[in-house]
Image 1 (tube, rainbow, N blue to C red):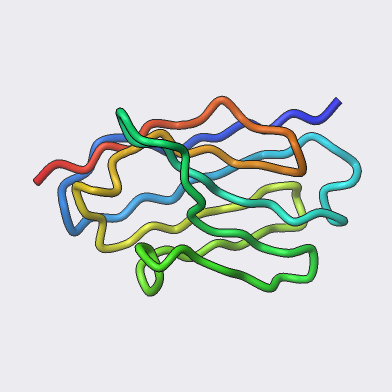
Image 2: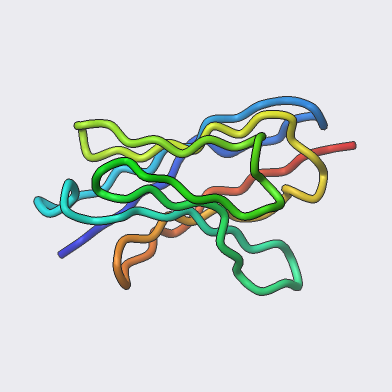
Length: 110
């Protein structure tokens, strides 16, 4: 069974930074793309970033140049978030195939 556990969320002022982590418990970690999504209150869940099994990345326009996705050899995917804005406030989820984590809350104050 695949499990994904996010961490690293919190409260930060606008302009600040946070690094989210997603630990994935599957032996097929290295064979899969991993993505980050987010869901703000009252809004649909939206794509943030994805990293392929070979390290290719893609980002939503709203976070390009501010967020960086990366992966380690220890079954962990990171989302480095810089220059945070109040509109980045959301619950952030990681996803592998059809599996989702429970999310971590990010709140950016103005």
